Image (cartoon, rainbow, N blue to C red; front, side):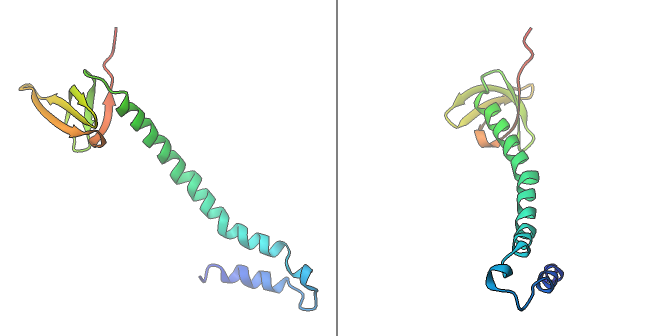
Length: 116
């Protein structure tokens, strides 16, 4: 709250106490609104928009994954997809071909094999 005190004091100093009502609502109210709104808009543009783009890109990769693609889970397991059913993915990992079934939301990265 103390952050706004200098701005409020400056706005109050600009007001003429003998001015009519229509002159009291002027640029100072616009500037005070900008002081509040501008940081919120900047925070949205800098933080939220890029995160939404990354999330959308990851969702598209997960939805376009097919059998044979390599995945990395959020837990760090790596393997090759062997079955996709609704919202579950079964993949095999290691030399022993251990099969693990996870939900799609547990996938962190999808790596497409290089096709020649």
